[in-house]
Image 1: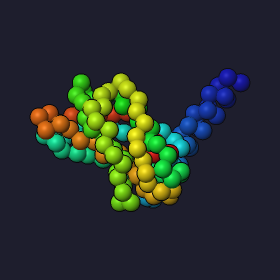
Image 2 (image 1 turned 180 degrees about the vertical axis):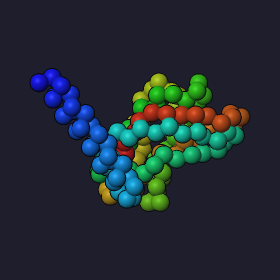
Image 3 (image 1 turned 90 degrees about the vertical axis):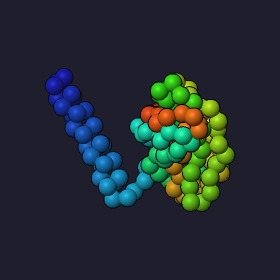
Image 4 (image 1 turned 30 degrees about the vertical axis):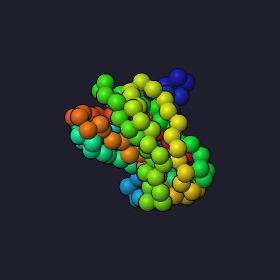
Length: 132
């Protein structure tokens, strides 16, 4: 009985991951109600990099950021979209959770944009976020 349960749970997890990967491969963005992980390198000397997009579910709702690691550096972050950007949240560091201005309308694609300070080198960052 225990083996059947473990086998069933393994199958569910594999299928769920496969569906998520299939959706991403077909350009379908994750909804903003789910926390999405990211792991990227932000170029140094005031460089920037963005996460993948999420589809906003509630107009104007604050975005959530759980920044796991920033290699000991401070960065700036904002929501980023062709429909308009949020204001910069300054001096974010790993190991903290933040709420970010996210003025974009429902159904718009939104990403996070991270930027390094002008004197900092390349900075790896990882964590999870949702645009709400």
